[in-house]
Length: 294
Ligand SMILES: Nc1ncnc2c1ncn2[C@@H]1O[C@H](COP(=O)(O)OP(=O)(O)O)[C@@H](O)[C@H]1O
Ligand SMILES: [Mg+2]
Image (cartoon, rainbow, N blue to C red; front, side, top):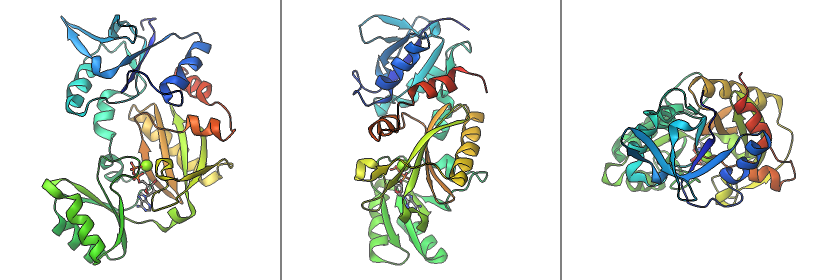
């Protein structure tokens, strides 16, 4: 394995102090591992070499890196190009999460289409009629949401057969966009857990409670620091191993009751919240898990 630095590829030129790239760099440094930060949108191919521009402007040949951590996608239009460029790097370069895994598991289809981890029943259609018919046939309360959303954006909770449901179904499938139809889980009313997992290990977590329909902190959800109950810990551990098998080295899990609601695999939030809650700095534990073999 080349003994080069760890490259942290971010969406923005200058990450905020509470973002993963800013919090993880000192933890790598404390382990004697140098990090280089670069915007993922500077990725380019230079006569067989896959390079980025470091923040100081110098060109970095990514094949000289020991490890790469993709901490943001950057511009949407070039997502596929960037993942293909990164996937083409020599196998000696280790990824925290491989680009192929990001391509496959980023978004909400991957979890919805598997049966090993408990996830609410989910359908996906690109037209409102199919959404409306399915909900009427299955009956009850549902969540409608875009497959690639985040921060709870675009999410609507509605009863099958209601006007609100029909409105949301039409709105979310405009221009034939796909929309997920997911069984609403009542356990979410008691709040949910955000658990950070790295390389098959459970690192830490906190509880958060919704103010509206979604518990996302970006939507006004309130976080509290309480010990993780054993059943949540077990599901988080199972999920961590499941993700690690798919070459996903770091994730933020959302768990409500017995359900794994979401696995956020690109730049999940949590480290800064844990620090704000006084739980401590878990960046060193994340780095420890990533550099050690399971
Ligand atoms: N099936 C569901 N039942 C109940 N609440 C849900 C469900 N799906 C999502 N939510 C609520 O909405 C939030 C956002 O949904 P999520 O699927 O995690 O999408 P996002 O990527 O936007 O965070 C969840 O954290 C949860 O509070
Ligand atoms: Mg979420």
